[in-house]
Image (cartoon, rainbow, N blue to C red; front, side, top):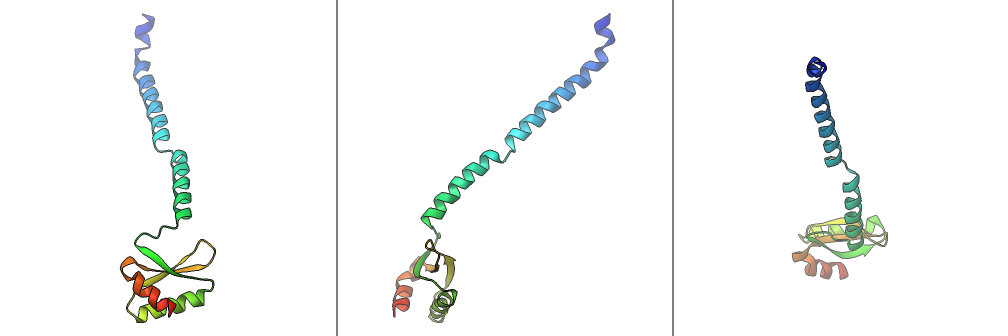
Length: 109
């Protein structure tokens, strides 16, 4: 008879235990610790390679004014370009791959 008098506690105890298991699973699945390590490794790999996607550097300069001057020369020639930080601390002028040879010719002249 002792077991039958505590049967009303069995349901809540099972529910609390199941909820505890679900909380632990959610903490494990949605934790960001393991993702942060992989993201840091990926960022270091990309930062070392200086991959600009569809853009290629055509010139690297030290001063921001020089980079803006080169970008305006390219813009006047109808070549879209942008400026990004270079590995050596300078600034790179970037253009699309299709315009790279023409842009290099303008920059060198």
